[in-house]
Length: 247
Image 1 (cartoon, rainbow, N blue to C red):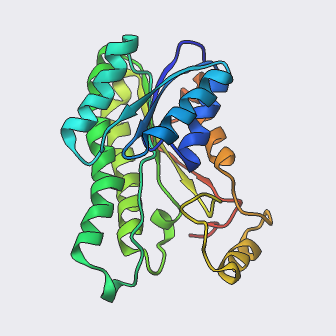
Image 2 (tube, rainbow, N blue to C red):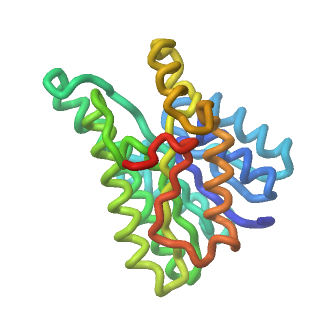
């Protein structure tokens, strides 16, 4: 994967950081997208460089269309092309439906779904000109089966799957693939601090007997970005230890 250029949104922590580092180990050049933590992004840049890749920190709120365009154009300006876009940026604002505020609904949709749309639209232009490219959207099993208390997040992640398949159909004739990964319960900052009884209950329902790691998801993303996945498009790869079987 040497010389492959990659933009990972939400790359400063958790799953995004693991994805950036995995691409770095593969020798890729990585733009570490972040919204509000330049220090964390620079730490990822250093980790990518230490593992053999090349990286820089790229700040911008993906829910702003101009910022999304700038993230993509920055990669093209720096390295001449964009080979891989990973839409990983996401937030949660969990609460029950009857308690959910309008702003919590809209903010999650704006970042998790609309932000991915903006980045896909921006990346599609250079990828179509190149007649090659990989787009990987980080969805969730919440988008496949829904989660109580996550109406906004589940809707956004389900929408991301629909977006993935529509884009896959539109861009396939020009050599651009678009796929999604759907992580299950992964141990990250986003899931830290949950009630241990809840976590234990989830773990018991995972056929493989453990929670996921960011590295589990990163491995799937790097595979979908590789030449080995060149005949795969419009698919959703669940990385959940079997938790979502039957959804």
